[in-house]
Image 1: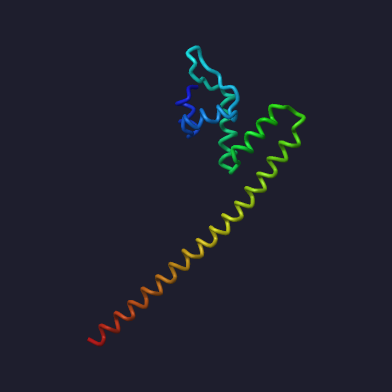
Image 2: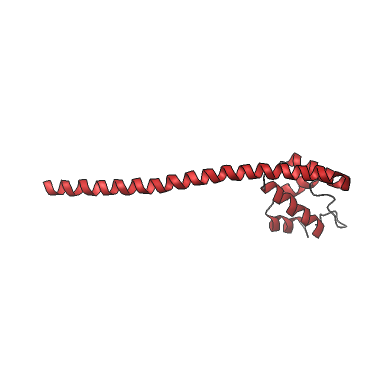
Length: 134
């Protein structure tokens, strides 16, 4: 699959894909006879993984370290797992913070609607009173 197709499929710019390849997040992308990138299914799996991890908030440095460890083999299993656990815990804290923020926004929105309706009622009462005095 050519870079334009991969870019569209994974909603990543071609520059981002090239960057990920250059820093080793997508290992050894194949090239055709003309030297044009030709992504394999395996390459696409790496892209999916990297995109997922980036969406989860992992920094490039953490991902690069993870992939370096991965390429070293099974002896790094525990260290890789530790990295993922640490990142999961960070993400869980972030989700908790976002949930609190969402609850606060929902409260403000509900309160806003109640205050707005109270103002409208007040305006209607004042409008009716003004009409009665005319």
